[in-house]
Length: 389
Image (cartoon, rainbow, N blue to C red):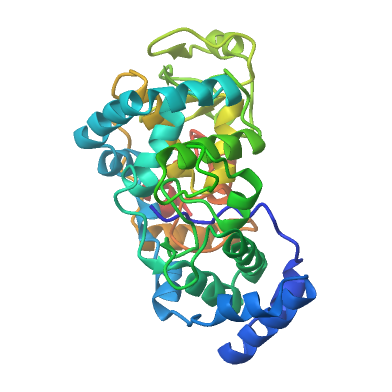
């Protein structure tokens, strides 16, 4: 599963600096990278070997522009990604790597389900890790001028991994956006959070599940994961409540939510933790309580739908029941969503890119305009709302 926006923890360029260095002839761009690498202290011979096979890859640009899967609603997306095979494989891998997951819980306070869910969604437990040449992908994206500040630093991180013997510029492959290995981490993240989980002296996320899982856990902890705390809990919401309080911008304690008629669908509240009620398909659809650790997921991936599905699947792998899909009102198609975004933008709302994706800014704008119009402010866009606008 390629991410909507990859994490880049080792950024050293401002967007303005990176933009000034992108574009132009590809060969000239690569020559600029080589010169900068030498200036950073890398040996010229190593730099020459590293860049000897680099090529521009138009398939990377095509993949970057076509991410329609994120237009799906939560229920459809979750049902597409979560299968009986993935659940069964998750249970089997939890047993197979039980000692690794015990170390992860001891060292980082992260539940096995969290790493298993990422492992499943990113690469089907290592089976499909991507066949894009990683150096070509990173260099193509850095040259592209769309998000060069994200990708240019990753090239130099990959060079450092190459010097450590952990990256082959001609053979290392992964996702189109440059992520490598079973849990899909960028070179900079591997440098900063890589763990030699199997003790062989190398951090090899493509071939070693212990390395990949321990590295993923360290990265989550580095991103702010709070040890031993929950991340998501399914809830039931009343037929009527102040829907404007739903969404990630509002946090209250579970007891405060309970006073509004919210109740856990299974299990007990996590007492005294701030939490948000999220209803991804409106007041008639599924509902969850998101605890502080839920926000860490957005450091890994910025798609709300992906994040919620991964967080839910982590619970499912730990024995939670199938979520109640409810009976939500039909959502908008991609073209309809673009039309709605255009109408909201014309009214002065910041919806981000007009891309047909119900992202965080679009959700906030929908909720705000629903309040203006006296509609239930559940942040779920419908054809009725589109027609009102």
